[in-house]
Length: 282
Ligand code: A2P
Image 1 (tube, rainbow, N blue to C red):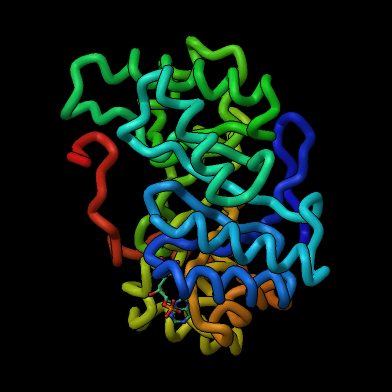
Image 2 (cartoon, rainbow, N blue to C red; image 1 turned 30 degrees about the horizontal axis):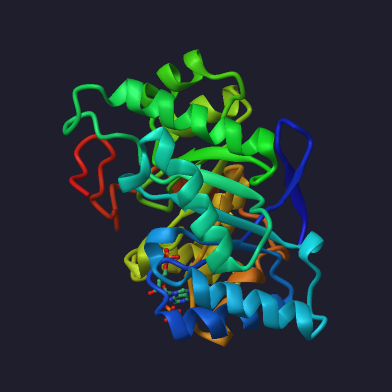
């Protein structure tokens, strides 16, 4: 699998396995299978409640010689209950202990402090970011970024930052094309990652996507993943099924034409999670 590069020059594999909503025992099997067939990028988070099982799958895969640590890219995310600067290092240490790793390749603030819920949301984001910068300088994390940040969350954070965010992981799929945030990130050299690139399965029945996929001889899931790649984002499809894990990685044999990309861009809102970073109450 090919790499994209961060602004600091480090590589990041251009497609990864999502683990949100993978039951712990399923997560173990999914990660092992994904590594076996060539995935080198696993997207995790403390809140998913399965980092111990993911860690067991990583350890077993190292032991069985399937992959070496240095070939692997592992992401985790700081949960919303740990935005206070003094809570950040304990959170990453817990994640590292659960994953059985000395470092993660990328650590993200999972959600911004919600504008609708917190008067001091900008300052909270800035202070949390400072604590992530310290983790980066201390070598506990190899890259730092954010998730679910819109430009109005990123701007004040970047104004106060010494190290600029390398990634913004956002909900991105046909029917949720996030043009404004993607353009902002492209302009600032922030790599965009796509969570729920299949709209958590909610876009797969759309007739336009079915017709376009048929014209390429790919599945709708592959079309969605390929659309993310051609829109310069790193897709993180979640699956716990061996066949679908393999299907989702077989997306490098075709190109979507500019015309079809645009038809997909222009889909009406479809399959969105409804989670708005300005109003979330968790
Ligand atoms: P499963 O884990 O049983 O494969 P997203 O990554 O957008 O959140 O989508 C994940 C959802 O889509 C899960 O319900 C997953 O179920 C399903 N899924 C993943 N890959 C495919 C695929 N290739 N075809 C159909 N459904 C898929």
